[in-house]
Length: 100
Length: 464
Image (cartoon, rainbow over the protein chains, first blue to last red):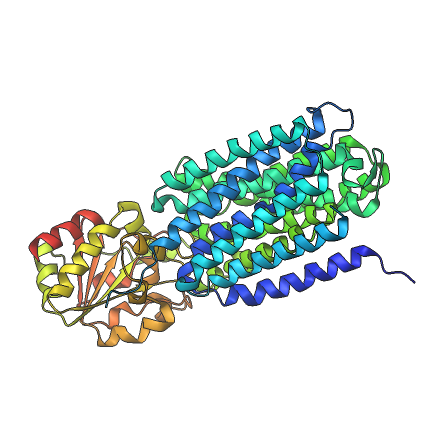
């Protein structure tokens, strides 16, 4: 009997939760704010869905209802990707060790 | 690009995201981690372009919109002051939520593009995944907007509660589940739109009863939601990068919520179900009788600290509001010149988001190895000469250890009262957000400094 591909994806999902659990516990508490901004940035990988939606027009026109939602999502996700990574970088630059 | 090849690349970008979080285990590796994250994102975007393979005029538009969004994001990232970080993160969460809603809508309207079947005949599993993704995304969006408004001070931070609130939330939650079930049977667009609409409404209802100082939990929780929304969409699109990322972000937000709740000794449900101040008004009015306090001025404080051998600084939200972090660093520099040993003690829930104080101190060039967490430093108060409490209140209240009647009883607090003397910078004797009088004000070894945190610190610098 063949296994539904959903089960494979579900396995990846569950294992990733465990990976996330252990990785996040090892994050030092002083970096919890950058952790939030970087998780924000990476969750914007949802942009892959937005790009597919924007480019896949069924009627041949570039702008139809479904692709317009795709384009809007691209803007939102792009704000988040650039904003999220850059603000994280800005914060991380500030963490310095004591000068000896 | 073949489906197998692009799936492999999506897996690689998922792994790079894991490494991005892994880097945050220490400040030294964190910057490298951030580059891993950026690399993962670039790979995911390029692979998506290649696998769609449509480089016509649509591609140019995608590029234009990408640049528009990217410029807005970069502009915000460079301009935002560090004190506004909590609002910024809340605002960004709302964008992820809305993007998830838009992608789900688009998938519903044009399922062929995503290989999900055809209109009116979408695969059952996909329908469940996309409606869950849309619902969680919508809740994340409107909830984050409310959190943003509260943090920005546009909306009052006071909890908004009404009778039967929790019952209504539960009812709407069940309605959404029922509607998803119904959607699967009927495939009706109207039901889909109703689910999205109601979910926006739930997000608002969920966040309005939560008070301003519980925001660290709310932000972490919304962080977690944005992850689950992304994962839901990831299942719809059958995209490994999104599934991995969604799970990572979801569990990260959940862990942060847990840490924040533990820092307040409250259960998650207690926070979610609403205000603290509302539960116990009596205990604060009872202790309102006049008790003597000692107050001093900047010269007294400067004298005390200059002659101390060790000083511990306890910053809180008040420091962020007064933007006092730079003045504070100057004060510490002056003290160090006098041979005083200075360290910083941070309570897990100090400020409005996890790690808020650490970022502000880092901004003021405070080396991170002088900044300590509650467990690391709490024993040191007994051997310290002066504790300088600036903008913190409830997290120093000894009542949490002594009075089982108090609403904050059992909350881990900084043992500030054990130091030889306590300097408490505060504008007035008013109780903190929890509505509880701070016993520390009336201790013999406490000197109250009634002033704005920034002004007082600047004056101390002058008299040093």
